Amino acid sequence: MINPATGSVLTSVPGMGLEETDAAIERAHKAFESWRTVAPGDRARLLRRFAAVVDAHLDELADLEVRNSGHTIGNAKWEAGNVRDVLDYYAGAPERLSGRQIPVAGGIDITVHEPLGVVGVIVPWNFPMPIAGWGFVPALAAGNTVVLKPAELTPLTALLLGELALEAGLPEGVFTVVPGKGSVVGQRFVTHPAVRKVCFTGSTDVGKAIMAGAADQVKRVTLELGGKSANIVFADADLEKAAASTPSSVFDNAGQDCCARSRLLIQDSVYDEFLALLEPAVRAFRVEDPSRPTAEMGPLISAAQRRSVSAYVDDADVAFRGTSPDGPGWWFSPTVLLARSTDDRHWREEVFGPVLSVLPFRDEQDAVRLANDTEYGLSGSLWTRDVGRALRVSRAVETGALSVNSHSSVRYWTPFGGMKQSGLGRELGPDALLSFTDVKNVFIATED
Ligand code: NAD
Image: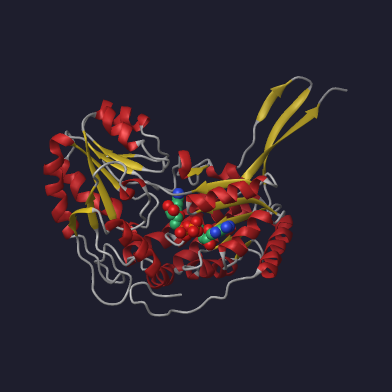
């Protein structure tokens, strides 16, 4: 593991091989027999205790994420707190996982939500803690056991969460972290018959391969994939507010965010005015040592990621850039590019770095057309003071999570996930729990 802010080696974590992965899956399979029968109130209590233990280790988890992933300390504390909050939220679920009673002739009909068995959660490197939690927490609450594979570059907080689960009293085998390669551990989650669902967050290409592989055993999947989300600014918007919040909507986490609003669409009548407001906000965006409380952005995750991001900027029209530290570490300054057309690679592809592409639009119809001209559909924002337009455009833009006059995407109370090639299924919110269960229908005859 390398600290991306300094380039220095932190530690190394041996990846699990096939045999160790199989052993972890089999332990989880065995643990499922008893975990599913734990009384709902007791399962709820264990999850609440897990939340309390995470809370007691919040600073430790956050510091580890700053060093392993280069996240700003402010973000890392939020991320550890998010794991705690998601545990508390779904701790309410085991006692509320009700089925239905359906009127039928000749008897009583009830439905129950059965857990699936072992759930495999595969996590990317960009948000190691929250994305892990969005998968493993509802899975456990619904009565499944979990094997979780963190990304190769960022396994440290997941490994600590695995230890904290045991400290909280979760039985051995209920939640196991299995570090290792995607092609070994992750792939085994797809092929091992005891794993009944794969909850994957990562790139669209790997997601497609997982979906194809899962078909063989009709394995359930949730897929949270890439994004190329639009931030649409209409001329009637509060332009100052929209411009002030635009840098964090795309440069937060150094742009390594599937929800990054990496395409900025500005109505042509305010195009110059808006860019003039945006420029000082971008230049003032604080890119510095992520352990400083003032940091708004840290480095990219790796040298390879920096090479990949740089390639998008090399021959593009740069409008303006922010600043970043010199010296060791994988730093990259926030960059605003003017798209020449919608064919530009930086306009079409997920850059996954602090790069914003800008295009003007004519009217509402044009804005919707441009926003939807992508295979992705994860997130997005629109800025207007016209309520009717806000509602019309919200309905017309093909994405799973949209915010009006703000840039929020993920709130643990509400559903999160993608349309089109950004994903399949929804995480978080009241319904995610059910996607870790199968509905069973039971008819009980009452006639003699
Ligand atoms: P990635 O697809 O390369 O890897 C994601 C995870 O999958 C890693 O743990 C990796 O080891 C594993 N993996 C790789 N090959 C595998 C295989 N053949 N079988 C099983 N597992 C395999 O993605 P990444 O580069 O780590 O993450 C960046 C991508 O994740 C971006 O495209 C981003 O948009 C996406 N992402 C999406 C969301 C969302 O919620 N929609 C959130 C965060 C990141």
